[in-house]
Image (cartoon, one colour):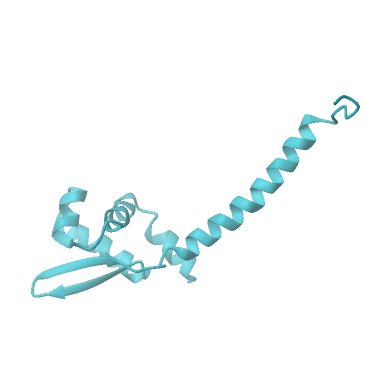
Length: 109
């Protein structure tokens, strides 16, 4: 599986996207994330595990406390893919719009 596939698969779930959004402000404990998500700690941990498998987050454990933080650059494959497709489709749609608008009368100033 490519890193893009792993990232897209991991953030396909709304709770996991919310975890990523929350972690953009800095590291958080799984308990704090569970509170934000309104779900149990074990349920939240399953989402964190999926994000960790994709390389998006890093977990550290101190005693019974698990802290989660974003891995810098982990969403870069998705950002690169989105930019490439935005540029491709933007250019093609601009050309299509020009074609659909028809010829312009260039004799007027």
